[in-house]
Amino acid sequence: MTHPVQLRPTTPVRALVAALALGLAAPLAFAAQPAAPQAGVSQAQADIVDTAVAAGQFKTLAAALAAAGLVDTLKGAGPFTVFAPTDAAFAALPAGTLDNLLKPENKDQLVAILTYHVVPGRYPAARVVTLDEATTVQGGAVDIAATGSAVTVGGANVVSPDVQASNGVIHVIDKVLIPGS
Image (cartoon, rainbow, N blue to C red; front, side, top):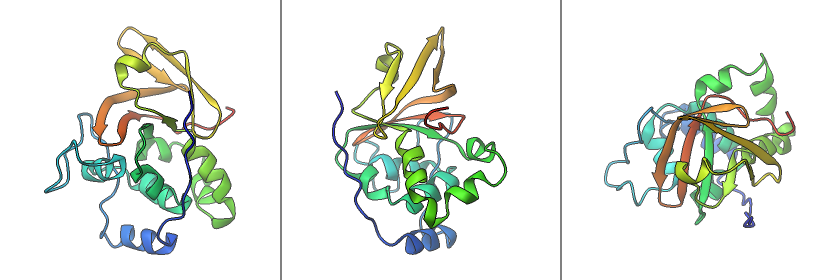
């Protein structure tokens, strides 16, 4: 069952990108273990964005979420399951792809790619491994395969499952998922 997700406008993109560039907003990150909560915020209270920010290594995802206007959405009630690509995953895209996606005129394509990484509902790893596919917020279905202890989503390896947040769960993946590929 899918839940409608509204994409609401956020603080102007320039302000968010400037804050990221100035280090006023910590970069999104995921480590091989669950993320540490921000100071004064318990893990159970931190939403998906704050949990990711507290972890420390996903600058590219942070910039993409800001450019796409999705930060407020992922700070919303949810629940959401996010298959979050690492900085290395973004770096593995063909040369120029990311720069092109971050252009204002390509916002719709960027939103489609990022929302293809989000599944409405809370799907911990124990539930993910029972699925063959999941319908994303973007509307497409992403294939899921579990073999032994390895799990792939859309061909990406889940490298760190079950990073808990107050409004969902994050599974760190090693590849950017592209709808229709």
